Length: 630
Image (cartoon, rainbow, N blue to C red):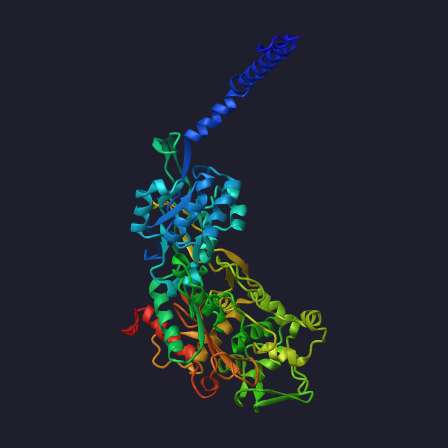
């Protein structure tokens, strides 16, 4: 029995406590051994990572010039805001996101989502939060009150700027913040989430040259994540500069003429492109209406985006390469060359066009006038539809055998129709070159002679881009070489060293008789000298081919309130250097006018012809420029 007032502890309990203490000591000793000896290197590395951080330095993007050194795309100074998730305590994330939202104009949810996604992806890599550059005073505020914004970094961020946005946006395109899909595609190329990337145009096409290489700044920080100093800096390598084949002066002349017509209501939209036919260099490329590509840099509004998307003229589309149109009589190049190459026609093939109507199988096919007897040159120069109906599809009434739809398709494709030209721009359309097999596959219907007639004059199912049309005529103008058109003249480093020069790129040599090409060139020159392509007091030996094509429905109105049945006006031209039919043309140009006014086509002169004369004569210095040309 225990004495009252005394506590007795059984020896077994003391033993258990002693064993427990020894066990705890052993466990702690083993854990300490594991931390310091077994995994000591690993944990020292983690501590070092918390103490030393590598911060990326974005390179300056390469700039873009025209062929004479005119600056077309540049970099202006700006500021960007980013967050390194590892430096932002999670219990302060909501507060920081709220403060940033008020400063940079981005929703709290968007900021939080971006930080959380980056925290999961790579918490040591910064995530860019600004969708557009912030003002200098805002940047200074964030830097001066850094204690309120842990993990927030403000850095210099070059702002892409386009001095002539409406003039060059179809060519240059624009840049923007990299998105998740682009980041995944370019992760192996060293891209980060705060990178800017080309979205369209040449900015997209030559991203690999323009971007440059990231630099890195290695900094040491204390336990409070304050920078103690910079340990090392690997400077970024700026992107390479692009020099284009485009001549700014010609670009402005052409844009002025096409834009003026739209503003005056003479046509609703227009496209123009000029090329050096001897090497495929694009000298000018204009699509009207255009858009302000700077808006995508500083932040396009939803109302502006809605306006562009709802505009039936599609200003965001480069109409020179991205839209297809019926070529009208300009396609008689294909029909004529097919007939000459297959032996259906020669220079002296005469067809008596004594009526404005050719009736076959009960169907009427019309010409724009009764021309009388025409040989090949006369038929081409006067653009007789019945002459080319007959060359392409024959005439059952007289027994004349035409070249046929297969030949039309063959020579059209040889000239580059029905496939992209390969120009160094994204979004190029292929066009349509129909034949009996195509029609059966597309519509389940057999080909008819009416289809051949329509194709022979560039109507029906035929569809081309303005660039395809120009490139085909350039091949005729230069004697038979189809070049790949290109906008890039050379790539240079920031200090002026040329690192890449594409040079002329031959697609193919035309498998045709050079004499047949000379006949086409002679017919093009005759079209000007007889004033079918009306160029009064011409100071240069122009040659070319006009075209007018119907499109749309016969009733109703378009979105601009004009009649839905409209007419396209075309003129494709070239300027020989020596005598009229030589293959040494120094410039070729195609102009396309999207026009909803029938009167311009029926009773007025083709306005594309006058535009061509004014633009090229002014460019060549033989005529005085309009005082209003910028």
